[in-house]
Image 1 (cartoon, rainbow, N blue to C red):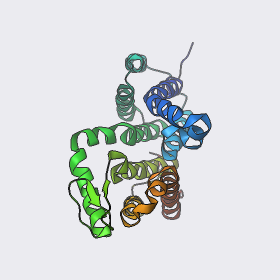
Image 2 (spheres, rainbow, N blue to C red; image 1 turned 90 degrees about the horizontal axis):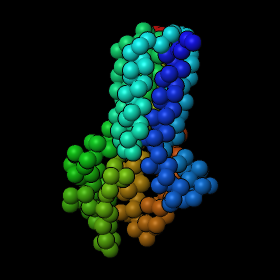
Image 3 (cartoon, helix red, strand yellow; image 1 turned 135 degrees about the vertical axis):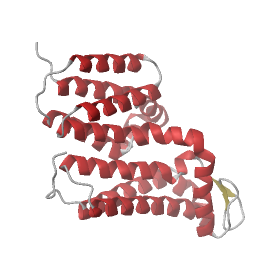
Length: 267
């Protein structure tokens, strides 16, 4: 029986993603119920779901290459990591799979799929690790920018309300870093899906989306500081969904206007 590489890695990625996202899905279901969790994409960004779909698409678009013995070894090691009841280990295993595929695959859809898969692990895993190590300084930078906009300054990761009635306490979910990682993922996804080169227009589009995501995030938090009476709306589900969809649409619009699939490089 001939087993293809793309078949093996479609299974590995599907299993690893399901394990890695299980904590977010379970939390969304327990907090919001089935319908609300479905509408909120089970706590996983729309960009991540799209990138997962692009990964599978590129796998299936790759040449029907027979699996090597090393592919079975890598799949076995990844499967062992997936058995451990620790979602973070699944993302680490997927990052390793992505690196292996990028190094051992010829130029084409398989290698591009590996790059997108590696990029998925950034917002789902590496950004969390960055917060675990550098969370304080990262949130302090966000708070300083919000404090400048509100006009009240900042102390650590807190920003006083404009009316002096309280403070905004910035948590990791409020940081711009997560949105930055999603903007970069979106850029990698589009570039690799169309096989584009990393040209100046592409780099400018990436920079523009990063600045846009930071601006939207800072605007939302600043509105809390400027209008604390509307805290529950801006900081609640309505504000979160509005900010997420505004960010997603803005990022997609920038990339759609700047990146053109007529400059393909097949890599």
